[in-house]
Amino acid sequence: MPIRHCIVHLIDKKPDGTPAVLHARDSELAESAAIENMLADLNESYNAKQGKAWVCFIRSPERSHSAAG
Image (tube, rainbow, N blue to C red):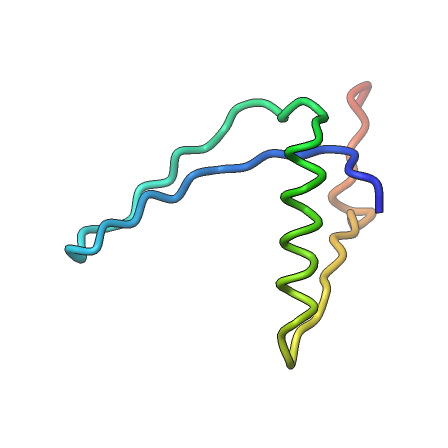
């Protein structure tokens, strides 16, 4: 499966019970071997687990807007 877009956010969760903090990335990561390896490792780990499912996000027609309006 080719990687077309990749954004990795950081969720900083402290062990002391304070609320987690999301550090959202504002741009896509550049294509690299590290991204390919990360996805391969994630895929291998995910496929080793029982009771899983993949999700596909599909844009619904009512939420699809043209920039021209």
